[in-house]
Amino acid sequence: MAKGGFPGMGGGNMNNLLKQAQKFQKQMEDMQKELENKEFEASVGGGVVVAKANGKKQIVDIQIKPEAVDPDDVEMLQDLILSACNEALKKAEEETADEMKKLTGGLNLPGMF
Image (cartoon, rainbow, N blue to C red; front, side, top):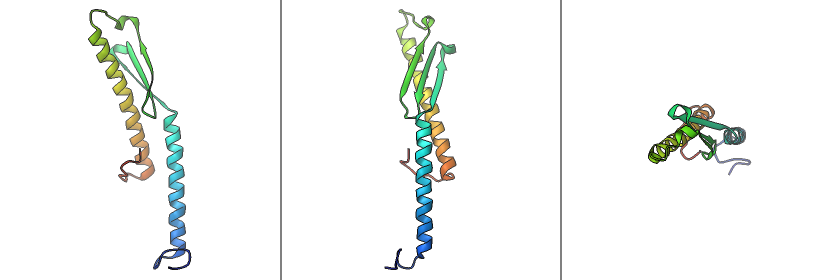
């Protein structure tokens, strides 16, 4: 094995590759922290139900206006809550994917997020 690298590979090239990998890893960690602290909001039913999700794809808040609560139509309220939650999570997922594309230059790296 060549000193400081692999056989047939220049040590300088390997060092550059490692530096680039470390830089990429730091950028990914920074982006992930930034996204985890971000909130994504979705409202449905004309704003009677609002859900907020964080970048970890967890629902962190749900607001329900009194006019959304009809004891004779609980199913409608359940549907509104599900829709708002799913939309907020979708927004979080889409922004995570968009930021990942920016960082990777469009490379498909499964399992990164």
